[in-house]
Each structure stands twice: as structure tokens, then as C-alpha cells.
Length: 270
Figure (cartoon, rainbow, N blue to C red):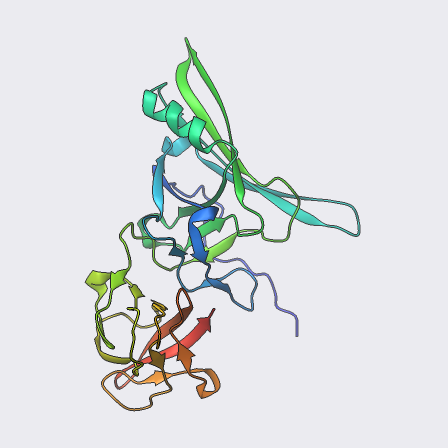
């Protein structure tokens, strides 16, 4: 069955406000990406970064920010290219240093979600990053640097939608095999390297319904194991009841389901 494309809401075409700080990440810093849902545009899970790296902010004057995409290509190769543009004010030493360091690098750009009225939007992927190019002027009309993030080739990525973690903290380090899930610690948890294997258990969770919690494997001589556990303080339901072994840098995403109690249901694994 085909699905109608209906009017989403009143005034859906009104310009959407942009936060002054776009959220960015370098593609080379990301070790695990959210999965893409069946609709082709929803990201499931959280971004996982190399140690010592994370998201960072890029200030761009809010009214100058513009997100766009345009389709093109020959009849056998139709696709689109995304673009995100904004102005950073002032020829400061910090701005020029940033430009020199990152011009030509591949980025993921996250924007929107202002006021909690819409999901955050994502441009850029592992295979098709948003590449930074720049221009600047310092004259009677202003002193600005124009930052442009765009694709270098036609692709089928389009814009993705994301409601995962965008904190700027390191993942919460877990000690032992018993894990307490707390919003204050964030939704990404780094498991320890272990010499003696053990079964992971969850002692408590205060996350909201439908949030995604991410576990990063710690490896070791005998990695921890997450099993299908229909009982316990926080039951776990894994796809086809297949165990997940916490090998170093492996990732599993668990969706929080709140019913008569809190459950964790596998959303994806890598």
C-alpha cells in the first residue's frame, strides 16, 4: 500500500529557528554510527566516539544559517547533495585557526530541534561527510567568515532525523557487571575490560519511555555477556534471544520500554 503525503501541521512552512551553536562532529572521530530505520531517514541509537573526542559546537549567527538540499544526476543516477551554511563573526585568531585546521575535513552537522518542537536533523554520514569550505570578508559591510558544509558528490543520504544523545561528556564508565542506568550519567555506557566473564545485569533505570541506551564493549580476556533476561529488576529482550558479547568497541543499542515495569529491548547492534 502507498502512503499519502499529507499536510503535516498548520504553518509547517514557516521558517524554523536555528540555534546559534550548530552541533558538529568529525567523521574520523566516530567509531560507531546509529542505525537507519526502515523509513530510511530515522536514526536509531547514539553516536559513539573515539576516546577523548565528542561532539563540539560551532557558533554561527542564527539568522545567517541555512540548510538546503538539491537533487540532480542523470536518469540512471539520481541523488541529492546537502548544504549547510552560516556566518561566524569576526576575524579572530581562534576563528582563523579553526578554519586552517578543519578546512576540507568531513563533518556531521546536527541542527534544529529548537524548543523541543521537532527532532534534530542530521546532515552527513560515514560515506558521505559534509566537507568544510570557507570564505570571508572584512569591509564596510561587515567582518564575517562564511562556513559552508556540503557534499562533494551526489548521494542518497538526504536529511536524517535524530533524537539520540548530543551531550559533550565522555561515556559513563561502568565498574563490574551490574549497571545502574541514570539520566544524569547520560545514555552511553562504557563497559570494563574483564579477565573473568560474567552476565551483565541492570539494577535500575530512570530513563524515559522510548529513549535509547547504548553499551560499548570493553573486551578483555573474557568479555562480559548480555543475555536475554525476561526477569530481574530491568528485564532485557534481545532479538531472537541471541547473546551480545561485549567485545572491545562493539556496540548494542537498547530501547527503553515502560509498561508495568521498565524493559530494555534491543534496537540494533554492531
